[in-house]
Image 1 (cartoon, rainbow, N blue to C red):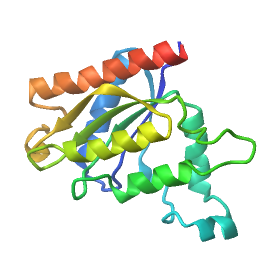
Image 2 (image 1 turned 30 degrees about the horizontal axis):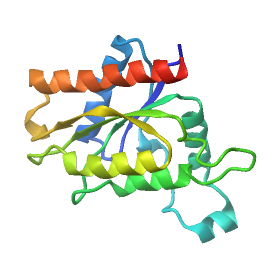
Image 3 (image 1 turned 135 degrees about the horizontal axis):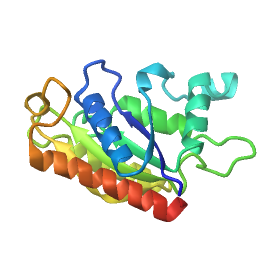
Image 4 (image 1 turned 45 degrees about the horizontal axis):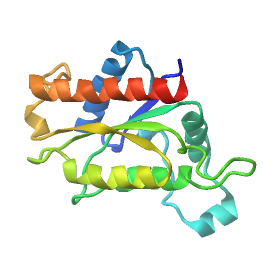
Amino acid sequence: MSSKILAFAGSARKDSFNKQLVRLAAAKIEAHGGEVTLIDLADYPQPIYDGDLEGEQGIPEHARHLYQLMNDHAGLLLACPEYNSSITPLLKNTIDWLSRPREGDKPLQAFQGKVAGLLAASPGKLGGLRGLVHVRSILGNIGVVVVPQQAAIPVAHEKFDEAGQLQDESLDKAVDGVCRSLVEMTQRLHG
């Protein structure tokens, strides 16, 4: 069964809570039988999407590499920081570049039919929950099936121990539930 899942956080910050969260969740994906490729978007810098830039220089090298990674995976695990109640510019820009048409490929090929699980961590009391609404909407509009479960980690600076594990059992179970659902749905749709 195909349960290859590409996992990343929508943050480039080295000590991001969402990077901690996606690492923790990647291990849970593997425990549920999924195969995870964990990447850091900081390793794939791209200019802000601009149609004129694309027309003059084509699609940037890092966007081409990410596009291939997306095509090689049936699922996505995203840990999404919340900026001003919405999606981060880094995550939105990544989606924008990866959604650009490629000659010989179907429209939105990197996204169509993929399965995604959404997580968030924030120092705020809602844990990034408001931003997940926007991420879910964007992904749904470009053909991604988003599992119904999601997990948001509030007051994240108090929730992780020194080893990067969640200290709150109910939050850890919520993350595990998203990971289990993502693996199961990915296997059902792409197995």
